[in-house]
Length: 385
Ligand code: MLT
Image 1 (cartoon, protein in one colour):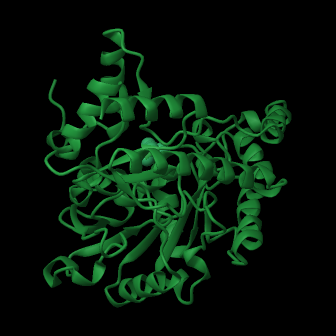
Image 2: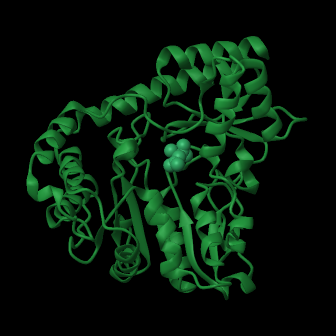
């Protein structure tokens, strides 16, 4: 049997690899604590589970779902955008249901990238922004991202020869993995850049609902001219502790939504409609649980920052997301340092370099870990270093 040549360039998925390392260490008898994947440890709110229980009893929900998402789901997404951001989107042409943002990101590549076309990806970002290109024979240009420029991806320095072959560009704020937010002027510049160079601008807003110290993340679609060039991805995963449910949506530019929908309808058959009904409750029901989750992550962020400072690691207070992005000491690569944390403390963290070239010198710590395990992990790290 011969797999496709593209498989030679497709790495194992970061968190599948981390799961493998964790299992190997556990087989040695080590009690491993994972501060790896951003997978909320708190349960999905009861109001959403109740809605699912009602929805699952409805036989109409047992048939094939609508490809683009149930009309009532798309209407609810539009209503959520209206309530949350005062943005009006057309539920029929500017909203598309996704089986999680990851699925939407991956399927944007066959919709927009031909062999040899470039995608502009953040110098440090969610791995699927680049692996999606590998699957379709596309090229990636990493937009430089540094602590000095506040981790804002620098699209202005993209070489002309790359721009001549570029079709799509990803940004994401509040940012995974660096946990910074972007000023809206940055969005305006990205929109103008995408317009000038005829690019689809994709704003991954998967962390829009988790923010700290009074900050509320905006939608790029609030900005003038955005829907001429941009789509935005929203997800129930982190906002409502629903990672396992796989439910999200894309909103924005109608041409991009249509292209993505055409790819998807050829590849998948949509989201179980009962899950869409539960997501409607998530988005349109009382939002107190969302605020409670941000408060919890903020407390955890502060505990992590305190411990890191006590062992000489520097990290900026994050404005959102469920991560702390910490600079490691000189003399190690991020892979070596993550390896040391596993060997000396039994704690798993992803190395920064796994997120792109500009992640070297950093590690990411997930706050989606129960308080007692998080404290124990931090104690073990403090003891080991
Ligand atoms: C993360 O930890 O970055 C994400 O939750 C992982 C994922 O979506 O696969």
